[in-house]
Structure formats: structure tokens, C-alpha cells
Length: 336
Image (cartoon, rainbow, N blue to C red; front, top):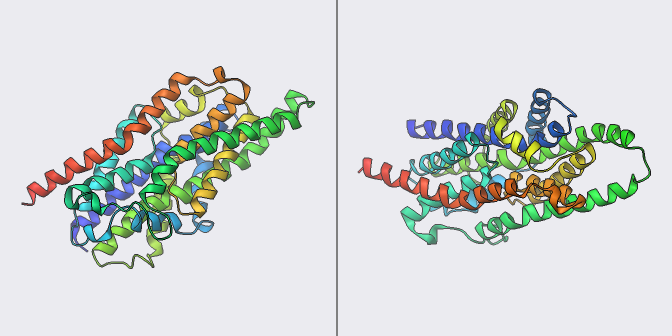
């Protein structure tokens, strides 16, 4: 195995680790905000279920990432391609995590792949729709749909739950939903692991297949175990600035609201994961938390924080496309 391939796999795992750190906020924001668990216990809880997802989910998302974003032929024989894609994506994720912005790590990775592909082969190398309906077209569609679905489901769940418990004493309701939040947080963490770990696995599989070291249709399981382990470790260490943004700054949460947000996010991720759509867990849980806040009143959502988050979302794919393109041009120039 060539040195550049080994280095690229290490960078992919570093990216997977940053994914876990940034997205730790998605998994534990609500149980920390409602004080069901301390931050330390919450990240351990989330990390365990992130890894446990390997035994529950299939490989649909990794298949989309390896075969449904760019033409595999553009990568064949070019061992620097994935290196440049990952480096550009990782730089953007590091910057946003450092500034506490809960961006979509998934879309950073997609933008990272698009940049070198366009530089090397033009727009024709991008796969917009596959025969089974997947591809960039569906991914871009769910950039908008994932937070809307999360918001709608959370809003409906919160309204129904408020009505069901309208005559119950508030302290009893809080106690009940503190217990229920453990299960909803676990479900969301399963959805996160089953979605995001597979995205990095898909890119590593694309790299190995392009070098003739793996079958893209029957990928080696060691790739999945490695990616699930590393993303769980990143989740355990956590990106604390992002956790504060998601858990405390977006909208005030009580245990009932936390349960509804996490359940809505889990439902969305389980659905998209089963269809092989690499949806953003960040977009999903942010929309769900907004839905809970909006169920009380629109002013309960701190919209200035929402605008900052949306701004990071909008710039993620263009920013990582540009960064990975520049890195690819630089590496190509150095290699002559």
C-alpha cells in the first residue's frame, strides 16, 4: 500500500474524529441543556450509541458516498484526489468547530469531493441522479428538507405531548421526561453514528477501490469498525463551544422539549439512513430544537443564533469546494 494512501486514510480518520467532536453537540445538546446528564456523562452515553449503530444500520449511506457523488473513474489512478478532498473539508470543519458553529460535517465532505472532481474532469464528473434516484440532486434536496422535517416532527410531537400531559403536575412531567430523554438521546446517537460514520467509510472505500485494494460493491468491514470507533472517540471528547451553541443558546429547553427534539431527529435520521441519503444530523437536530421552541411561541427561538448557523450551512459546500480545489491545484502543480 502506497504511503499517500496510508496518509489519506489517517486524514480520513482525523476528519471522522472532528466529525464526532463537532457533532457531539447534536447528540447531547438537549440532555445537557435540560440537565438530565452532566456533559461528561452525556458524551460517554452518546459515544457508546454512536458505535452501537454499526450493528443496526446497513451500508446504504456509505454506498451513496462512494458511488453516488462523483464518477469513480475520475479518482482511478489519482491517489492524491481523496487526500485533497479530505484536507479541504477538514480545514473548514476545524475552523467552524473552533468558532462554535454547528455546521454540517457531511456537506463539508461532499463539497470536498466536488472541488477536485470539477478541477480534474469538469462538471460532468458529478453524479446528480443515479438509476435508483440517489445522487447529488437528492443530497442537495435534503439540505433543505432535513431541518424542515425535523422542525415539523418536533413541533407536532411537542403539541401532542403538551396536550396529553396538560393536566399533569409539572414536577412529575419533568421527572418522567428526564428518564425518557435517555432513550431519545440514545436513539438520536444511533442515528448519528449510522449516518455520519458511514460517510467517512464511503470515502475510504472509494480511495481503496480506486487503488485496486477493495471491491466497492463488497467493502471490507474493518473500514466500518475503524470509522465507527474514531467518530465515537471524537464524540466522547466533544466540541464544547458547539455544544453550548446548540444546547443553551438556540432556545430554552425543558426535558419534555428535549425528548421531542431528539425523537424527531432520530425519526428523520433513521428514515434517511435507511434510504441511503447522507442527511445532515446538524441540520436535523437544529430544525427539531427550533420546532420545539416555535411550539411555544416564535420569540422563544433565538433567531440571531439561527441566522449564524444558517450562514455556516450556506457557505459550507462552496467553502469546502473552493478549499479542496485550491489544494488539488497546488498538489498537482507540485507533482508536475
